Amino acid sequence: MRIGTIVGSLSAVSINRRILAALTEIIGDRAELVDVRIDDLPLYNRDLDDRFPAEAVRFKAQLGEVDGLILVTPEYNRSMPAALKNALEWGSRPGGENAFPGIPAGVLGASGGRLGTALAQHQLREVLAYLDMPTLGQPEVYLTFDASELDPVTGAATDPALRRRLERWSARFLAHVERHPRHA
Image (cartoon, rainbow, N blue to C red; front, side):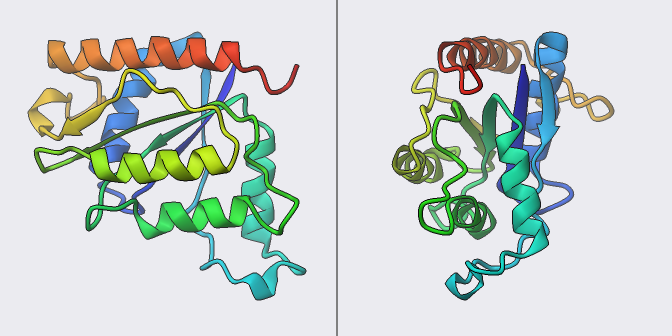
C-alpha cells in the first residue's frame, strides 16, 4: 500500500511534521509513506490552467500514484493553512481534471492550543468531501502539541496515551484505505 502524506505547514520545524514522523514510525512497514510536496507550488492562478507549471504537474502525478492520502494540518487563524488550500486548488484544476476523486483520505493535526486543529480539520473535511475523497470520520485526532511526548531524535511517540491514539488512528486509516481501493 502506498500512502501519500501532506503536511499543511511549510515550516521545516513544523510540529505537524513531527506528528507525521511519529505516525510513520507506528505504521512501519504496513505501508509505504511518500511525501507529496506542496512547498514548491506557486499560488494558484486560473490563468495558468492551460499552461500548468511543472510543480503542479508533478503534484498531480504524485496524487495519481498513491492508494491513500494522509493530511496533517496545523490551524492558522482558525482555518486550514493557505499552502494546503493552495495545493487542493492545483490538484483539482483545471475544471474536469480533478486528481482527487476516490483517494481515501485521513486527517489529523496538532497545535499549541486547547482546540488542537478542530476548526481547520472541519474546513478541510468539507473541501475533501467536495473533491470526492472518501475521508476517515473516526477517530478524530485533534492534538494539543507537547514536545515531551515525542522522542527528540527519532520522532517516535514516547507518551503511552499519544502512542495509543496514533496507533488506533493508523489502524483505522489503513483499514479505510483497504475498504476504498482506488486502483482496483
